[in-house]
Amino acid sequence: MLNHPQLDVVFQALSDPSRRMMVERLSRGPASVSDLAQPLEMSLPAVMQHLQVLETSGLVRSEKTGRVRMCRIEPKALATAEGWFAKRRASWERRFDRLEAFLADEEKQEAPRTQPRKSGRRS
Amino acid sequence: MLNHPQLDVVFQALSDPSRRMMVERLSRGPASVSDLAQPLEMSLPAVMQHLQVLETSGLVRSEKTGRVRMCRIEPKALATAEGWFAKRRASWERRFDRLEAFLADEEKQEAPRTQPRKSGRRS
DNA sequence: GTTATAGTTAAGTAAATGCTTAACCATCCC
DNA sequence: GGGATGGTTAAGCATTTACTTAACTATAAC
Image 1: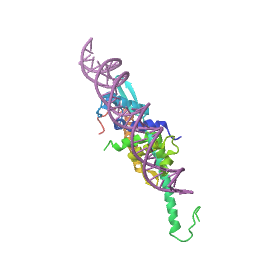
Image 2: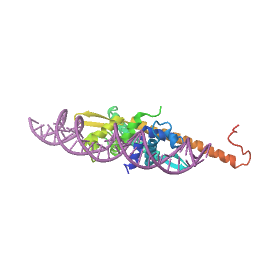
Image 3: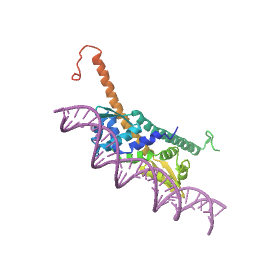
Image 4: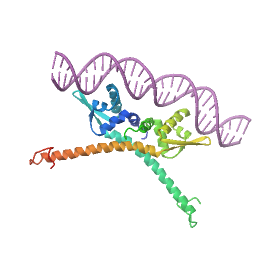
C-alpha cells in the first residue's frame, strides 16, 4: 500500500525548477515544445529531455500533429502526489490531537482536586 | 514570486523512497536515528546522509541529547510543498471552468436558431 | 524545389547522488 | 576502567542527472 514507486519519479521530476516551470505553464493550458522552451535558457534538446522526464513520470502527456507536439498536464498524477502530503498531514494532525487530548486530560488531573478520575485514568 | 528554490530540495528529498519512509515514520511522531534506520536495509552512515538531506530541505529537524539524536518533522515545510500542488490545481480548475463556460455558451449559440452571432456581442 | 520551422537523435561530459567500508568519538552501564 | 550502544566522519565508487554540440528528419510556406 505504502511506498508507491510512482512517487519516486514524480517527485524527482518536480525537483527541477525548469520542469516545475513547464508544469506551471501546462496547468494554465496545453503548449507546444517551443512554447515550453521559450522562457527557459537552454537548448531545445535539453527541454526535450525534461519533457521526457515529465512524460515518464506521468505528469505530462504529449501528442504530435504535423510538426508540432502539443503537451498537456495529467491532473491525476498531480493529485496522486498531492495525496501523499494529505496523508502525512492527516497522520501528523491525528498525533497532534491525541497530544492535545492528553494535555487537556493532564490539566483536569491537576487543577480541580475533586474527582480526578478519567477514562482509563492512571490512579 | 514563483520558482521557490526551497521546492527544489524538498521535492529532491522526497524523491527517494527511503527518505519518504523516514518522513512517513516521523509524521507519526518523533524518532531516533536508529529508529529511522531500523526498517531500512542499509548502513547507518547511509541513513545519516538521508537525514542530512531531509534536514537541509527543512522537512526534518533534529536535536541531540546524550548520545541519541531525536528527529521530528517540520510540518510547515510539508505544507509549503503541498501548497505548490494546490496552486497548480487551482490554475487547472480555473482553466477548466472557463472551458466549461465557453462550451455552455457555444451550446446557447447553436441550439436556438435565433441570433446566430458570435464572440463580438455580450452587449 | 528550396528554405525555414519544429522537433529529434546521438554522443560526450562535469557534477551530483546513493551507497559502501573503515575508523572514530561520546555517552551510558556494569 | 572497559565494554556496549548510538552516532559521526572520511574516503571511495558506480550510477544518474542535466546539460552541451553536431547532425539529422519531417512538415509547412514560399
